[in-house]
Structures are given as C-alpha cells and as structure tokens.
Length: 160
Image 1 (cartoon, helix red, strand yellow):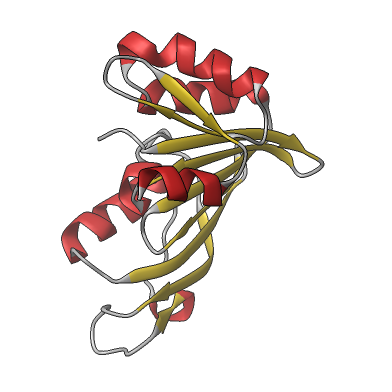
Image 2 (image 1 turned 30 degrees about the vertical axis):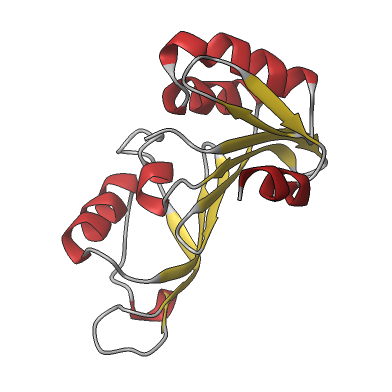
C-alpha cells in the first residue's frame, strides 16, 4: 500500500519525512532487516492483558527484523505511540499506527525511503515535488497527478 500523503523537510534535527496512512509495520519495512533498532517509547492498548502497554512490557529487540516479526505475530496491538532510534539512520516514530515520521541523517536516506514507498512509475515526479516544496503536504494519485497543500488541515479539508 502507498501512503495517502507525503511531506519532506530539512530541519536542524535532520531530514524529515512524513507518510500519512502508513502503519508502523509498513514504516519499518523500508529499513534493512538487520539494522540496529532501539525502541525509546511505546504505547498500545491491546497488548496482552495490559490496559496500556509501554516499552517496559515489550521483549528486547536487537534489530528491525525482531520488531517486524513481533508485530506480525502479535497482530493488532492498538499502537498509539511508537518511537525508535536507528543509529545508522536516525529516528522513526508513528502515531495511532497510521502516521509515520522519519528524521534521517541524510537527504539520500529520505529519497531511498520515498523510492521504496511511492508508486514506481511516479516516484521521480513525487520526489521532485517533495524536494522542491519542503514542508508542504503532497498527494499523488494512481495517474501520477500531484496536489500540494500548505498545511495538514488544508489536506484534511480537501480529502476527508
């Protein structure tokens, strides 16, 4: 599945990438499975018998593959918050298991993620629009037509 909306921006923290309507599992699949990962914050409502599970209730994970296997085997956890540090890349976080936010160390890392999640036939157009329109929300339909929004609220108003 492709994200519904994209955002790219360079900040003092690094190169940011936002993917709308993209799950935690989908967001992790962009990384090499052997990549080192440390979960720094976690909140879920459906994990085991906990009414609110945090990172303290999770098993230890060494890499992205461990987390992917965990998420696939557990099914719906009701993830509300997920934050992880990936030493070779930066940080990855999700909100309500449907909004992925990456802060990468390099622009090329963001471009690599975009290439892996965008429709192949439209990835170059989409990447160009994102790089040329930082901090703008952009959609890309199945025909490759892009729309640019100045805010998330504007995107929601036109796509709700």
